[in-house]
Amino acid sequence: MSDLRFLPSVDSLLNLEKTRQLIDKYSRPLTLEAVRDVLDNLRQEFLRDSQFANEGRLSVNEILSRVEGMLAQQLRPTLGVVLNATGVILHTNLGRAPLSEEAVRAMAEIAPGYSTLEFNLQTGKRGSRSIHAENLLVKLTNAEAALVVNNNAAAVLLALTALAKRRKVIISRTQLIEIGGGFRIPDVMKQSGARLIEVGTTNRVHLSDYEAELVNGPALLMRAHHSNFRLIGFTSEPSLAEMVEIARKYRIPLLEDLGSGAFLDTSQFGLAKEPMVQESIRSGVDLVCFSGDKLVGGPQAGIIVGKADLINRLKKHPLARAIRADKLCLSALSATLLHYLKGEALQKIPVWRMIAASYTETEGRANAWRDRLGMGTVLVSHSTIGGGSMPGEVLPTCVLALSPRKVNEFLTKLRRMNPPIIARVENDRVVFDPRTILTEQEDIFLQTLKLAWTGEE
Image (cartoon, rainbow, N blue to C red; front, side, top):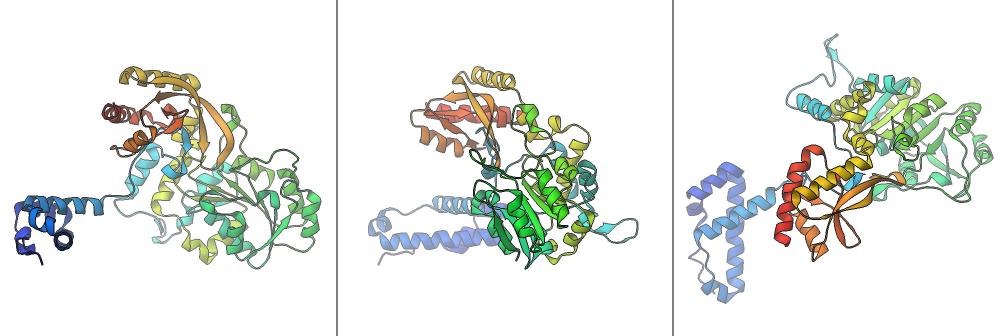
């Protein structure tokens, strides 16, 4: 057996200046654990490999380098900033909507100290967190009341659980969609305890299909926006106005899941018209659910607006506590909603700035990138909305294209940069879309890209 006495003791390592620096940076318990782990690993290496035991002895500095590397690896944050050059505006894998400066500032003001999250300054007694953002949502949508939870799937789950548990909910087969991550509308509905009643076929549904089931006394009529796919060809669905009319006729609530939600008319940017929340409320829908971090452009949230009596039932349901939004979400959402009320969404909310950016603007930025870097080719391409929103809709754009010798290796190198750059591939070229690089990120983006390319070449 190899002689391991040459390995330094734990105590001797802890008394070194280099180790004390690690303790100051990472704490004594974590550094001690790492020292022990590195020494244990070395013992195992020496015992397995006699040649290494005789020839591969490490110096104290080399051992401490391993300790430092282990600490850095173990404690490196897994959630970090990336530069999104893909041209996908609501990139789910990259965190969806970037927040406005005002939304970030609102969170920063609330986060360090205490707040009025559930405290009423007028009475000096406990208040309700459900009031935060509610007045803004009511003013913006003209709904009677509103409630914010932690995401849209939770919003739908709460509405179905509170209003239709162990009762029938009617939905068209054309709307039994699957959203990102394998989550399916039917599965969410079943988790609520509601009894799912499917009507129509996969491509066509008629009012008569609904009426055949409405006579049996269901609790709810549900309508889900397709969001992430299009129904084309030999298809038909009742209009929203027809759905509202039939719900009123049978005196049951109509719940609409809009998915992305939108407060602005997307058709003004050359896109298909996305259903707007205000239009659903104006049409008479009883409850509308949608996301806060998609076309709204705010933090992750599920938003429910609609009739006050129904919203109040949701607020009082025990599930509402389990899925409630926290103070950071509510502060950021409130700041985002203010942009719409003040008529400044296109200037302040990053998602809408990206959507509104003209082809000429992207062309100018792409050409400026090429000139500053002294490399690349500017090409005509397209950007997408992403996030399960507006399938098939694209925005014309210009991209900077590079042609590395090994495309996949270059993409990997970009991901390993600090900060990482996420790009896409078109026709064996790596392309970078200005639409999704924020203007305040432009300098660091170009510096990082230049460093990556210099190493490539």
